[in-house]
Length: 450
Image (cartoon, rainbow, N blue to C red; front, side):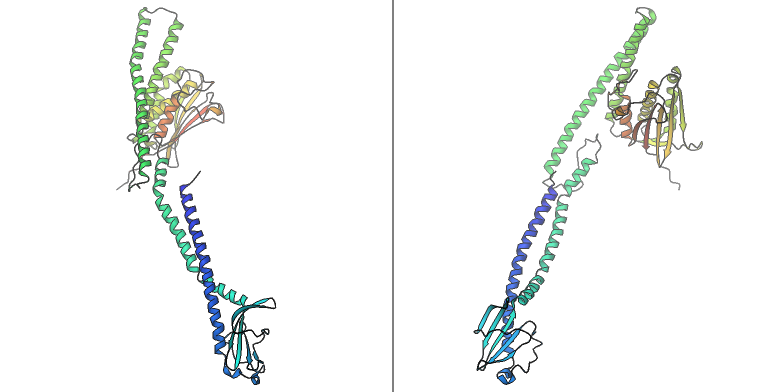
């Protein structure tokens, strides 16, 4: 995937690096040329500064004046008198042939020399220096002139990194705003600071898309809610008429046929009720949270389903871990009606799919600063490959028996998600059955004592 930030940084840094390399190459060679001119001037200055007492053969090779300041290890000096006899030669430099006056570069003994010759009235002076020494000194001086350029390049790279990061910060903020939004948040995007001109078209397009999605989603929720509401009253009236006709004898038929019709009617009524509950949960993307006793809601749910459990001879019970009589440790922040629907759906599913004579337990837990509960049964469970799909709307497993619409777990998952809790389904490892866990409910804040 192509990154604008990497593209900008790559081209800018590479461009600065290439430009700096070209500039450094030019500066380096100019510095070397200037250093070479300075060394030529040094040769001339050495030749002019030699003492005049070396003008005759009398002072020949016997004496060697003090030229330590000149640096005899780097410069070779030769002096001839007026008769053409060599009167002085610096040691241990090799003897060079006498060359005409002026400056030139020669090669002797596979070594290049830069030679300057000066004709004076009583003598001829020849000063030479190895080209390798000159180049080494020139390169050292030239490199010293490049450190400001290297410092400038480093500062420019840091400046480019900071400027590009600051310039692309609104894009990163937009990405984080979109990544952290929930699936149901379709409100327009807003930034605290000023939005750059380049980002405004993208922001306007995103807000327009969110507005259209919100309108489409609202229309869908409204249609489901209206359809379910319109169906509920006729279905309830139809059931009452069926019961009345059955009692007064005006509806004649086999008892099994009437029971099957009533069963189908009850199933349709339950589907309509679940559609209404699902539409209500979709519409309430964020509601008012208040302090709710999860223990009391669980006690109410167990009481409401006790008759259904007794009819199937199922042992329905409630367990509270770490329960203190004087303190309710299971107060959470949530919506009472939504949490009631959540508990009802999970307990209802457990009772429906648990065989006669089975067991269903509702277990409340408080651990690690969070509150949760578990609905555990000893029914057939769910195949492992279907556990990830059973919370999808209208999904029912291939081996699912009994009545159902496939909306109970979808509604429960939606409510848990709205309360920022985790709904987990797993087959019990110690035996047959299913365990549905809701964890991460926010506890009620503890009042601060004054």
